[in-house]
Amino acid sequence: MSETTSRRVVVRVPSGPEAVETVDVPVAEPGPGEIRVKIAAAAVNPVDLGVAGGVFHRLGMVHQPDWTGLGWDFAGTVEATGPGVELSADTRVAGFLDGFDRDHGSHAEHILVLAANVAVVPDGVDLAAAATVPLNATAAAQVVDLLGDVPSQARRLLVTGAAGAVGAHAAVLAQDRGWQVTGLARAADEQFVRSLGVDFATDLGQGWDAVADAGALQEPALRAVRDGGRFVGVQPAARLPEERGITVEVIFARPDGPLLAGLLARVAAGELPARVHAVVPLDKAADAYRAMAEGGVRGRIVLVP
Image 1 (tube, one colour):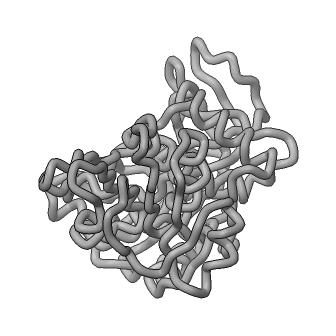
Image 2 (cartoon, rainbow, N blue to C red):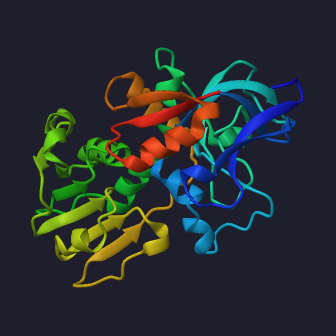
């Protein structure tokens, strides 16, 4: 990279990991309320595979003329600030980008972002670990908010995908609201799921008061909810219809700097997991996407410029 250009991972014609490439773009200056972050680490999430594969283009949610930027989560240091920003240079921050229709993403060397959407990374939390937190923990917190307070005598919550990034956070956070949580995962993940302080299951079962469907099982998970129960999904483009009196909600994670600050503090305290599966150079992004697509990843693959 020269002093005036920055690398960015994009797709021009989305068709999966093979379409992932790196381009050089000018380094931009932050506007009012913005900061430029020099990225130290950026996590690869399942949603990134969807963007690279064209899922959201086909749904009419992306309309970029040249290329679509990849990546949501990031952690790094403040390099420049715009008017009205109180953060100082070299402050360690983490956050995630909003929305699908953009020509830039966090899989890059630099990024412009609203200062209000980031949080300072606590001392003692590695930036690679911090990069795995923003999107997934924020989504989990918003799932738990949609579940709401526990009704009297109706406390049994099943979290699907409990060994995954969103599910693991949701399993921990839901306990704060009084839910009796069971985590659904493969048998090989039992030790990890139980380490979250919850019960464990390998099949959906029936009659749950609520299901937080972090594993995106959709209809089968909805069928596991009792009549009049609650269901929260994680696929905003595929919201399930309500049935049998079940309240159906779906999250679309939005950046929230103060919320993320609290979540990162809990990571620093060892109360929330921040798992790095592997660290991969930014130039090898396509390899990271292929590994993610093959499955079996626990934690997040993290790209490092």
